[in-house]
Length: 225
View 1: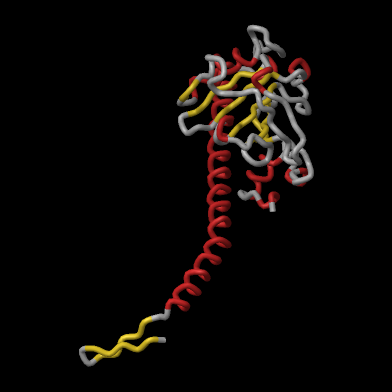
View 2 (view 1 turned 30 degrees about the vertical axis):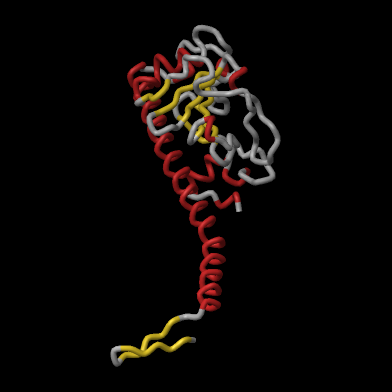
């Protein structure tokens, strides 16, 4: 330690070695804490956006059921890429309830050829190759994918879903495009929208398509730890 005297007062200054050690400690602490802070911030963002879009979709569905005077199993929908497929579901029942940034009608503006992945790392599918899926991107960057279920004709039974909705929290081009991280699955039953699966099925070693249930139930993503 160097002692400096001047003007009747004693001033203390750190040696160069002490400064370097202090900076090193600060650097180590920062390296340990900043990634954790970033992860927590990202987690809160995912939880908040998923809850918001789920609420909007649920309210839109209930309004449409009331306006149509019939549950979804009686809507004129068809599985596959027919004119009454996912595009019809979006255009006639859901589109008016959203502020849309991109309606994804132009090729390759919303989706690419890289496959999505399950939470355990196994490859899923590339949605650009699937004509029976219809995409939109909301003003906040959330991407919603609509799909009529192959079980539509049996969805008067509450065990079967009439359609599926996939939510990519920040859109395809930002990645990681993985179930349970930024990609979540919901099912349209005949009279309500429900998250896919049970919270207990949301595990890092699993597919992750039930993680929306976990997030809505616990409001965290602790299953990733």
